[in-house]
Amino acid sequence: MRCIHTLKVKNDLGLHTRPATVIVKMLQSYRSSVTFTYKKETVNARSIMSLLMLAVRKNCSLKVTIEGEDALLVLQELVHIFENRFDEKVL
Image (cartoon, rainbow, N blue to C red; front, side, top):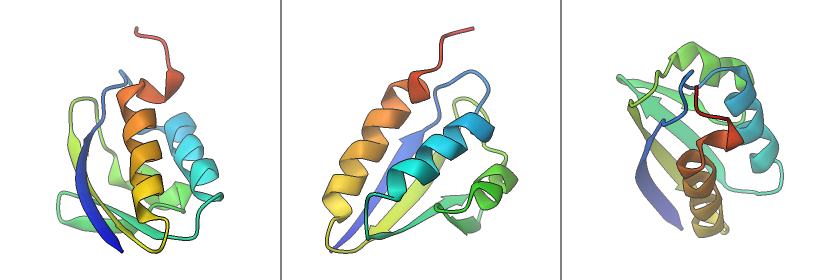
């Protein structure tokens, strides 16, 4: 199965180290391949360094592509953590 979705970064500091770590740790529970695309750059979402190199700021959107048997579950969890700002407090 393949899912493509757009996610908006809502937390104040953008996609920095802590949110990147949350994403990578969350993906360890799943088998699907996950990539993020931002400004024509596509990276493996399982790599903290790759996520940080995207330099995604607050209110920017990125495209997530998920391929695998548990793609829908991965998408649901990613949407949840992005919507909840990675549990970061509002500055």
